Length: 405
Image 1 (cartoon, one colour):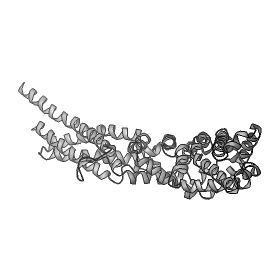
Image 2 (cartoon, helix red, strand yellow):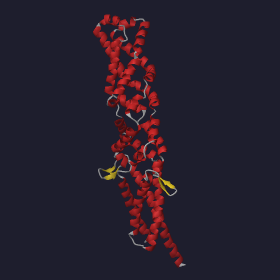
Image 3 (tube, helix red, strand yellow):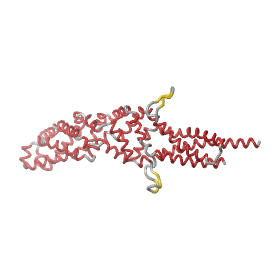
Image 4 (cartoon, helix red, strand yellow):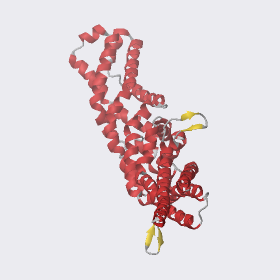
């Protein structure tokens, strides 16, 4: 009977080794992933005593690398304006521009010629409003041509995208989390399997060679190897490789079609969206350049024909006053231009077709190019995650030792 109890006790001690090893592999992998993405802000006593997620801590660099792929391979600045058709732009803004023109002309002329404006027949006022709007297609085309010519000065997609991601670290995380969702889940679950398999080997060695340092050493190796092996299986081999009847490729690379679709949807809705592009052009760092282009063309149209009956208004107050009126109309119209952006967003999304463009081009990337999308999240500091996993594994190994002795 005593022999039976001794056998059962020894069996329990041996059986717990692969179970604890599986938990070490699973736990260290989960912790490694959490440390990659969280916390968003540094917790602890800077600069060394504490932790911030690897991606949030290197937000500028991570965002820049992510955007390099986007702007280098997936979309070009020239496409932003080349796909916009003058006729459609005019059609989209006309319902907003015409009442805006009438309102501005009415306000400014009343300020300078209040009595004359009150006495002017409505039919003449309507002709003034109509004539002022007739130049819209010509002016719009001239402005678009100038914008296309100066687009690199007006729009820096990389700077715009990096600024957005820098100001929203969770969004930066989300790109990696959503695009690599299946791979991140694999890292978690593979820790259980690999840890259990390493634990069986550890158990066999312990039965034959029960030395005290075996468990801390094996815990260290399990914490190290489960992380390392999971990352290798996600990204290697880059290209399909045949081993007998089996075709093998990195798990992430196998999902290129699926990931491309998710990435394009997320990025074009949150980062390189038509709304963000329009805002960057009209209200970004180079907006003054754009407004000066617009002002130049509107002023030229005003000089060609001010929209007012020059003879009547010049006689009423003189040439200088009339010039001031035209100047004010131009200034106020230019000041209202950013407000027209919203009217163009719907058409811009349709015309640019950014999601389909990005998805198609991303699906055509080489494995080397596609790998960088998710690899960026791990490659620079993955050694930290592996070492942390190894240290925690060694600590659990000491715990195993106390249970077995």
